[in-house]
Image (cartoon, rainbow, N blue to C red):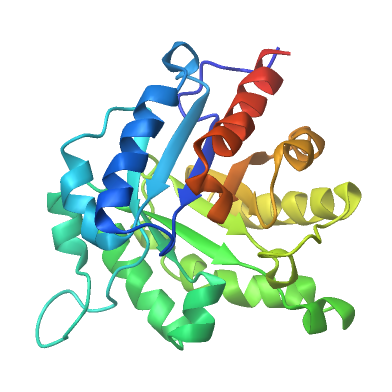
Length: 261
């Protein structure tokens, strides 16, 4: 029997990206609220990251253990920055999580480690938990550079160790670029080594922090069942499939079932 007394033993992140409009986001969130198994709510928490325009409306609907996260935030606290999403406003809406460094942001918005460092600094200042996405490209993987790349991508977070608080979860979402939106995923043994390494790095750097390591990239029920036994793996980050209520909650249910066994 796994320890289900941990309030956030597992996180499953629903990253809706830009797959839903404002109205579709409200409707989908309502479907989530109806579908969740609240009897098992102490074992799996869901973090919904909708398109940003829906955050204010959904903040009035949210009931734990379904939580809200933003897909982004500005590296600037305030001022003349057109089109930015500021962390103070996220805090006012009681948004407790925020995605940082997603592969699509790095590629499409030219986000780099300097930007990510400032985003992380502002989020931690406002007690918002970062969901830091890291992962190597297929070229880097083939060149045996996976661990060097991951270490480099973690550096912005590790450099802010003085801002860590035990009550603010720090989520690392390992999403290899070559697995996002594809049919390819890491073999079990390979992912287990990566998760163990990330866990060791994080806990050695800040043993008092609340670390959570997730996997993202082409997750379905079958792959979730395969990966759940990996030590120190604390859940999954799911993209497009999370807009399908049945498929998403099948994965959530798989986590519930595993925890009970």
